[in-house]
Amino acid sequence: MGQPQRLSSWRNGASRDAITHFVERVTTDGPVFVPPSERIAVFDNDGTLWPENPLPFQFAFAIDELKRKIPAEPKLGDDPMVQAALAGDLATLMGGAHFDGLMQVLALTHAGMTTVEFWAIVNNWMATAKHPHFDKPYDQVIYKPMLELLEYLRANDFKTFIVSGGGADFMRVWVERVYGIPPEQVVGSTAHTTFELREDGPVLVKTMSNVFVDDNAGKPVGIHSFIGRRPIACFGNSDGDQAMLQYTTINNPRLSFGLIVHHTDAEREYAYDSQPKSTGKLVAALEEAPKRGWTVVSMKDDWSTIF
Amino acid sequence: MGQPQRLSSWRNGASRDAITHFVERVTTDGPVFVPPSERIAVFDNDGTLWPENPLPFQFAFAIDELKRKIPAEPKLGDDPMVQAALAGDLATLMGGAHFDGLMQVLALTHAGMTTVEFWAIVNNWMATAKHPHFDKPYDQVIYKPMLELLEYLRANDFKTFIVSGGGADFMRVWVERVYGIPPEQVVGSTAHTTFELREDGPVLVKTMSNVFVDDNAGKPVGIHSFIGRRPIACFGNSDGDQAMLQYTTINNPRLSFGLIVHHTDAEREYAYDSQPKSTGKLVAALEEAPKRGWTVVSMKDDWSTIF
Image 1 (cartoon, each protein chain N blue to C red):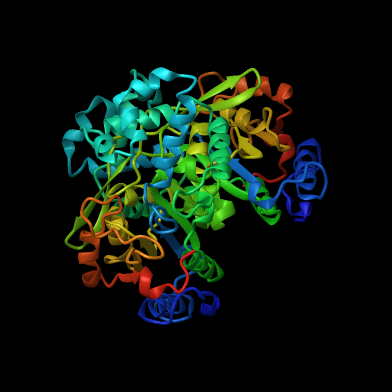
Image 2: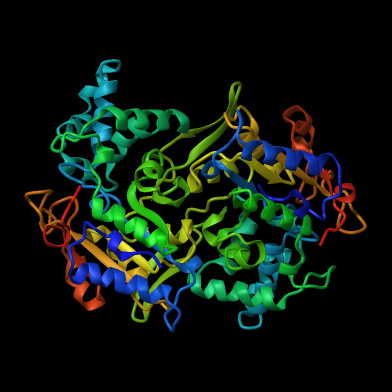
């Protein structure tokens, strides 16, 4: 069994106890023992493993990409949706029946190149861009208690997955290095690629067809499609994670565990999630938590270190 | 390093040597060493790990399901596509612009129930149905040399995946028990599910929307979508595997390996694959094999035991 003392950035208290108690029970011989192959743990990314403020980081990437492209294609700057993106105006982008503005910005920044080209673009952005508030590369703005939790679970033979509304292709570039999670354990939003055998070899070209949005009710759908079994542990932070928390914990034949990271620390991070209009809105899931026995982590109170 | 002597159902010869030579090179320190995390091996299923004659096994399942349903819903039997299915008339089912007949049969047998209900149906079929020729449960009609190969690769820290045109939900029921491959390492054909929180808990209802066919050019697309990195070893048996063989081996920055199982043994199994109209047609990929250095395994000559 793994050592709970590894959770050194977690303060002693009910949240930490709930985690270690659950892990001890499912890994100890007895009526609720779960064999290692069934120890599937799913983690949201934005707001759960790293922040999502002042903007979701992938959105910051898209804005930087637009800025990088405009000098060569100045007409881009005339597009009202590009203007909305550059202004960080999520409300405009998320309007329309099918998030038309957002899809347009994604088409400009996430499609029309090969998967290898996109990989290099993301990799380069991650190596050069910096978070505006923390003044560090985005992949160094990671919640230390959650890294410890990932390691603690893996030390107890859990298989850790990301299940995020973020793009799978965007995350897979850096998740192994940053979280120790291999690309094949990333469930994210996807669109189809097109296979071409070119003179210099096979490529997959990114398109915007068959977009799958791995958020809200899409999360259990994505879990089933990519993982094919029900998780026993689920970690999220917003109403977008409510469905996968439900899928993991309600009437699961296995002992199961749900946890919500509550952004309560305005000083060390952000306190935003109970505001109905914020990106990482946490209202319905927080209300459901006591009924389901989900552990609610207060970042301010439960974490001695955040980064 | 794993012991090649484990490949005991493989006769000594060029095919076996090609496999062990490749594995030894990528697992030994040197210029073509591949770190374990990058040792991704992908296996087709039908015709590669188990037979696909006299009909692909999942198709036999669909026929059995129709037969099971008709007594309660006799009108089903009037449907020309159901009649074609019961007659094993694949040509009719695969006709039409979008395999309309096949899609109709799949809708009747693979959708409209929860994923848990479907799991139980497949599990029950696997426990009760028998292969008409070999007179054994389908999950005992497995190529022993390929099981040994899966184990040999895993002993050398390869991560083994199935990449099959078969349904992911159909395969995930039994692959872990039969192949030692966990459900989350199965890439197959999929359709969306719908999440519902019912009174007795959350369910995912199988639908026929957003069908993804993991065959031909769909195989590299599926590999990218589900695994997110390029394999270094690929095992197939038909032209449906040609694109993933290309994707794995052409201009791969890593040393890579491609292998085709050629069905040459009419006595112990079937000899069918060079016939242009067979299900597991192998013409174009066989022609391409020498140019790409793909190993072609003759089941008759290279395998001392088949099952």
